[in-house]
Image: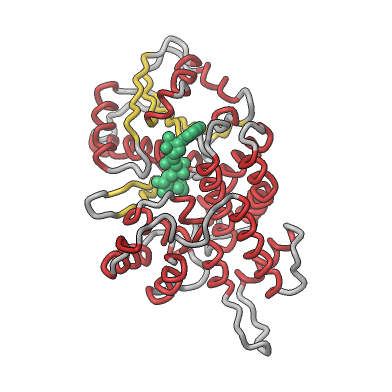
Length: 380
Ligand code: NAD
């Protein structure tokens, strides 16, 4: 028996923040980063609440470390919040999830949290609808994912006006994160008709609207479409799982501090080639399920796809073309200094990647040698 459910209520569109005006006479904790506070976005949210006692915890940083989660837990305890609002990119939403989850365990479920509201201000992670929170252990250089249904936000609000300020490079990186979520979910071991439908929609939205939102950040229609695509891809991968693009991106992010979406963008084309696993032997007409699904996506995007081989190659080329439009490099050479990639760092990265929660969901069974071959190509 299979199950597919969406447990988070999603409000979207221009007036979606209005949902917040239903919150009255509550103790509220807003979790965000310094930019979100100083840009006035946190204030905008406070302005929607009615007669609430609100505390803003704005110490979140990209790839949130456990120490900041611990600080957030102190604040949550002192405020005894009834509502948590996670406002920001994936880092703020994941940090808020971890603050809530660890506090719940520590306080033996004595907390009175009624709602956990996620309001993304980047269009990338889909964290507003996932049961994951990615946290960083700085001392060990490890990023690890907490996974539990209780991490699912109760409400997600997708207001496109909150993402018009995202600068070009972050628009590019986070947009490629959306594409990676959708493409990995589409071929992951847990994929099914429901997740495929969502992944297909997210992929077509990204190819159509990401270049527009990159070129013209004020184009509210393009911003809205990529914002929705991010959430749709989040629902897809939450149910289907991801793959080794993410396993490597998590491990590289933990050690070498490359933005998550950028890492995904660089690794994705190589993983598609690896998962498609097209044999050089032209007499061998056996194609993997993943290869056939990549061909399907190529057809959906109106790319040349008269056979599986051509379809897979067209898809890889289309991703490379999109990367070029978004000024994303094809290797880590410009983001990581050669001296930072010692043999022991590489070994740590590969060991973390092989154990990563996403590796199990990858359609092709993977070992450390395969990961090493992909790593060597992307590191440049
Ligand atoms: P982020 O949250 O780290 O933010 C990146 C930068 O963008 C920050 O400097 C932030 O201040 C800025 N920013 C955010 N909103 C902005 C806005 N509206 N205008 C201008 N600047 C803005 O980046 P992210 O890519 O959203 O999140 C990455 C994190 O999410 C990583 O830790 C990644 O591993 C994690 N992640 C989680 C999931 C999940 O399901 N929980 C999925 C994918 C990734």
